[in-house]
Length: 85
Image 1 (cartoon, rainbow, N blue to C red):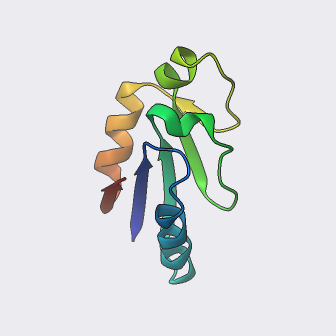
Image 2: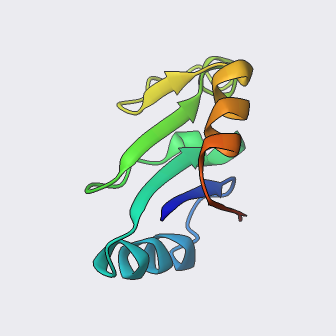
Image 3: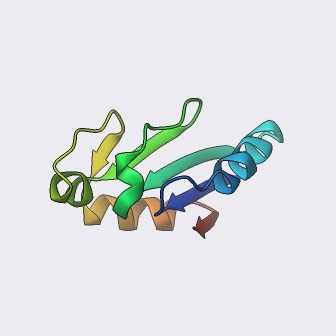
Protein backbone atom coordinates (compact mmCIF):
# COMPACT_ATOMS: atom_id res chain seq x y z
CA UNK A 1 0.00 0.00 0.00
CA UNK A 2 1.19 3.54 -0.78
CA UNK A 3 0.98 5.85 2.23
CA UNK A 4 1.48 9.62 2.39
CA UNK A 5 2.00 11.53 5.63
CA UNK A 6 1.49 15.29 5.34
CA UNK A 7 3.32 17.00 8.19
CA UNK A 8 2.61 20.68 8.92
CA UNK A 9 4.27 21.32 12.28
CA UNK A 10 7.75 21.12 13.75
CA UNK A 11 8.67 18.75 16.54
CA UNK A 12 5.80 16.32 16.11
CA UNK A 13 7.48 12.91 16.24
CA UNK A 14 4.35 10.74 16.21
CA UNK A 15 3.76 10.93 12.42
CA UNK A 16 7.31 9.76 11.70
CA UNK A 17 7.10 6.95 14.25
CA UNK A 18 3.88 5.77 12.63
CA UNK A 19 5.45 6.08 9.17
CA UNK A 20 8.38 3.90 10.29
CA UNK A 21 5.97 1.27 11.61
CA UNK A 22 4.02 1.30 8.36
CA UNK A 23 7.19 1.05 6.32
CA UNK A 24 8.32 -1.88 8.46
CA UNK A 25 5.11 -3.68 7.45
CA UNK A 26 6.04 -3.38 3.78
CA UNK A 27 4.16 -0.20 2.86
CA UNK A 28 5.64 2.37 0.50
CA UNK A 29 5.70 5.50 2.68
CA UNK A 30 6.28 9.10 1.61
CA UNK A 31 6.34 12.31 3.65
CA UNK A 32 5.19 15.74 2.48
CA UNK A 33 6.37 18.74 4.51
CA UNK A 34 4.10 21.80 4.54
CA UNK A 35 3.98 25.08 6.47
CA UNK A 36 6.53 25.23 9.32
CA UNK A 37 7.50 21.59 8.85
CA UNK A 38 9.67 22.69 5.90
CA UNK A 39 12.01 24.23 8.50
CA UNK A 40 12.93 20.79 9.82
CA UNK A 41 15.57 18.47 8.45
CA UNK A 42 13.93 15.96 6.10
CA UNK A 43 13.59 12.54 7.74
CA UNK A 44 15.83 9.76 6.44
CA UNK A 45 14.52 6.54 4.95
CA UNK A 46 11.46 7.96 3.18
CA UNK A 47 10.64 9.70 -0.05
CA UNK A 48 10.39 13.27 1.23
CA UNK A 49 8.76 16.21 -0.51
CA UNK A 50 8.41 19.85 0.58
CA UNK A 51 6.04 22.53 -0.64
CA UNK A 52 8.09 24.85 -2.84
CA UNK A 53 5.93 27.83 -1.85
CA UNK A 54 6.38 27.15 1.88
CA UNK A 55 10.15 26.78 1.47
CA UNK A 56 10.33 30.07 -0.42
CA UNK A 57 7.99 31.90 1.98
CA UNK A 58 10.23 30.97 4.91
CA UNK A 59 13.44 31.88 3.08
CA UNK A 60 15.10 28.53 3.69
CA UNK A 61 16.59 25.75 1.64
CA UNK A 62 15.42 22.17 1.81
CA UNK A 63 17.07 18.87 0.99
CA UNK A 64 13.62 17.46 0.23
CA UNK A 65 12.30 17.38 -3.33
CA UNK A 66 10.36 20.61 -3.75
CA UNK A 67 6.91 20.32 -5.30
CA UNK A 68 4.30 22.79 -6.47
CA UNK A 69 0.57 22.62 -5.74
CA UNK A 70 -0.16 20.54 -8.83
CA UNK A 71 2.38 17.92 -7.70
CA UNK A 72 0.93 17.98 -4.16
CA UNK A 73 -2.52 17.16 -5.53
CA UNK A 74 -0.98 14.37 -7.61
CA UNK A 75 0.72 12.95 -4.49
CA UNK A 76 -2.56 12.98 -2.59
CA UNK A 77 -4.50 11.18 -5.31
CA UNK A 78 -1.82 8.60 -6.16
CA UNK A 79 -1.49 7.29 -2.61
CA UNK A 80 -3.87 4.75 -1.10
CA UNK A 81 -3.83 6.35 2.35
CA UNK A 82 -3.19 10.00 3.28
CA UNK A 83 -2.82 11.34 6.83
CA UNK A 84 -2.44 15.02 7.63
CA UNK A 85 -0.80 16.03 10.89
